[in-house]
Length: 402
Figure 1 (spheres, one colour):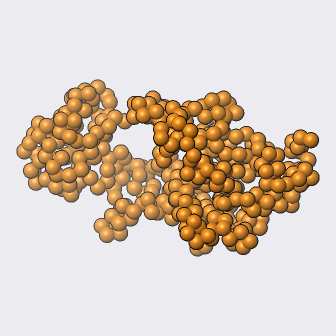
Figure 2: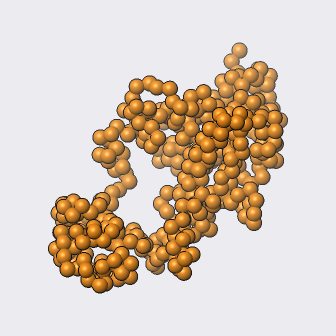
């Protein structure tokens, strides 16, 4: 549900982005949500290759729909001199330039950060790479699963027998989130100094930061946290329990006070709280198998509703394992009006209100664009005359109206 019309904090900001896949598009969509004008430069024809990841959203890609609302699409072949000249003109009017092309591609096109900032000192640039601009992996292509592997996420995710990747592109999301915050920090700095800054974010560095707990655990404990499926590697009991009616309830005991209440109220065995095998979290983790057997014996006979009532009485946090297909109907979203409608080439779609906005400051949430939908209008806005527009778009592109 949209709230009253308000001026969003990034209204008036112009972002030019040569982006693809997930990380950079996520960063720029966050900027668009907060009111920035985001001009997305795509390949003529198919555009951003994320458009072809799947066709599940009424023929559109779920990734593309998620990441590209509120953007204006300009289709340019950057190998054409007229197209590169058009990009330069757009950058002359931009506050922010974002790119996540293959390693070295921006520099070969004359669009490297140092080059474009040489004559535009107020411009904030953001380069999103896989493994950083320098170092032994700088020239490697990096996709989300590959970075999950290199950063150690697969070593701590899954079951003892089988490593598993995260079910969402966490390396991309981490990099997109840091790119977004890095851009905001650079813009704030520009307000004080008058000068822009080059922001550089890599998927590997971003996910490595998110690996902080297992990094310290492994570096100082001598071994990586054990893979425990949906259970926590370093806290017990903390994970799913199957109830008597076949449901799964996730419970989380965070400290010894909660453990004592859990034993007394939920397990109905107060003496278990001081059992030497289970009296501290470290001991509970050490004797996890025995502990889980005791919990299963008790809760595996009870229906999920009863288990939840007992956990509530003990003030122990819990949740049901839900199917993601029902997320849009979750009461935490629906009761707080966190779903909106956005336009798309396939018709109106439901979308989640982004976390930084809400009823008092609703996100922009404009349409998902077609490839090149805004090419002519944006290039005219940038000051190109009709011959320059034609040179930028090429002979197969739509002709400007007289």
